[in-house]
Amino acid sequence: MSKRNRNLLIILVVIAIYVVIAYILFLIEKDVEGSNIKSFGDALWYSIITLTTIGYGDRFPLSALGRIISMFFVLGSIGILGYVISQISLKINKFMEDRKLGYHGTKMQDHVILINWNSFARQILSEIVNAEKTAVVITSKKEDVDFIYDHYDTKFVFVLHSEVLDSSTFTRANFSQANTVLLNFDDDTENLVNLIAIKTPFPDLRYVISLNNPSLKKTFKQLGVTFTLAKNEVASKLIASYVFEPEVAKVTENLMSSATSDEDMGMMQFKITSTNPYLNYKGLDLFLELKTKFNVILVGMSKYNATDSILIKNPTNEHTLELDNYAILMGNTKGKEAISASFGIEEGI
Image (cartoon, rainbow, N blue to C red; front, side, top):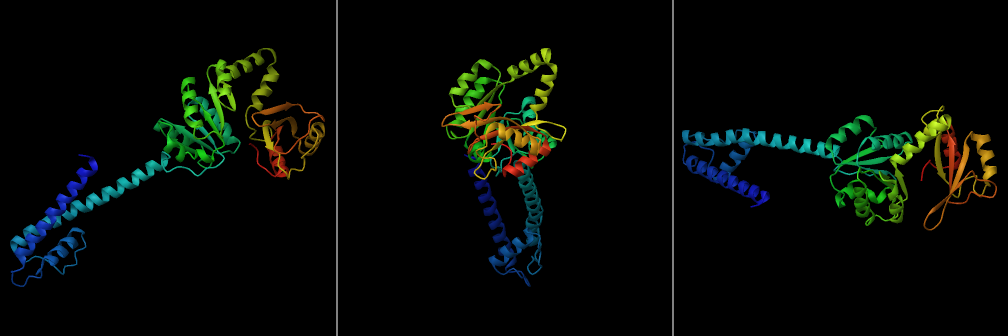
């Protein structure tokens, strides 16, 4: 027997016992001189008022046996009240726990979904939040939820506890309205399996993979991954740069982080819309204009075709900034705010 059917049976048995006892009370009290319980309805009314602890006092037993039987309702009212309070408390606690674990879902849009929490994911999330972008973190460990909420603003971060990537997880994390999915499993095989599981229902999302084995970058690229990041490869290049060009490495390290003050310099990209004042500008002309007006440096342009993007580094006047291109810029927070106001669009994709 299922738990639901068993609970239903218990409820029916309790109701049956309750009706029988109320009927016995009626049989005992109906012939007692001066009794105000003259019908089965009176007995039910008295029992209900007693069980709910209201106690109007308009109906009550007079006989000794009737009072003994009524003790069932008096004691039952204590049990029922305790049960109701405990159930309400359990429901409230479960509601709050489910909400904290993300089971009620999020309405975030154009957000990053970061799958699997670890120290590397923490560094990524810090950069996302520093850029004032929103992110959903999916983790299989409940203890991660408290840690993330203790360190990040809920304005930018939503955490979902989920051990599997299924339809309920997709709905709760609002995959359909997301911008980018970042798979960050420690095992590249897990990255591959989960990429296929997500990409089937959501083929148009941007996918970024954090790999341990750089040799798999081409494989994931062929599967439609937008960007693959080999953690060890990035670290080795940066360390090598420190060996023979330490000052260049310092600048590179700084640029890899989002600018959080006017003293910091960070990389940023802005999509070119039809209202952008610099639409159709030549590369060198745009470089001089942005540097003079906003103290922001044009580093590159990104042009999209049907299947891929073409990155133009250090653009010249042979290159034109066209509609739906991206301008790749370098600047501080003050420059970012000025560019955002001038371009009429927020930083990012």
